Length: 415
Image (cartoon, rainbow, N blue to C red; front, side):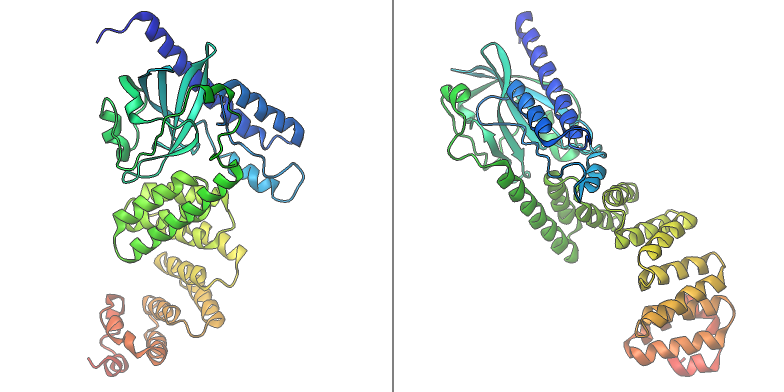
């Protein structure tokens, strides 16, 4: 198809406009943690960005939830510092009877490693200047794009002209990315609005305040997280991963959801991706002891016992009586032949929780490896007294093979 040079030049100008917006949006995000910028100064920056890049009721929606010097400001700083400018993946160009050329830009989240579509912006020329007039959010491949703010377009009102592919996204978007006109999902919700509302409408009646939208998004992310947990418990791991991905598209810096997805990825053998999620979760919430313990287990799987010990040491600094961390560190020490340190941690764990049969078995394993077989059998006997159902599990544990010739062990397990 032949496209005039003047039209291509306009396309290039539109893409430059969107890239400039994404950079300006990122700089405004960073301004949230600018300590010498007061509340009024920040509001003015938001107003300047919105008036330059948006038209109608759609706006950036960037809010400053904490002011410098107030409680929680440092936490906000740590979250924002891991952000990056959102990526631009794709541009589709349409013709509209009354609006002329309409550009649809597909962008990701502000996570450094965000590689999936999240927002879809519609841009047109208003008074010879490009303006963002609508924003849609991607939910998932079964419900498609949901209107978020600004105009509502109907598919019928837009005639597809051409596409520019700028950056290949995650495989979940591959079908749409490789398609010329894009994939229209089953429940795409678009209704046309008159052109007059683009310029003159200050608030479309059904538009929600950003604070309300933000809360709704967070609630939806939590619902998706809960669905992912449920699917994982049912053993439907791919479905669980899809729900976690959707949740993080909505709440990309949610430390708890990142931690949950990391554990799932570890179970699925996707260790590198799991480590990325553990690292990011702990960057956002470094005091999460459960995440430290989980990351230590992954480092052990990766053959990094010393690094795993560092995580467990930090976990125990935060929670000295965490028996899981003590038990796991005891196991690691045993695997390194550091039996005295292993036994010290395991005895401490047993003292904190005398009912924990897992710790009793860990003590039995360490004493077995250390050649103290009678003491190892003592601990196995205590574990069986607490939970007789463990007998078969212990019988099948090859770590206790050196004990099989001992009469007490044979009597205990009916050898």
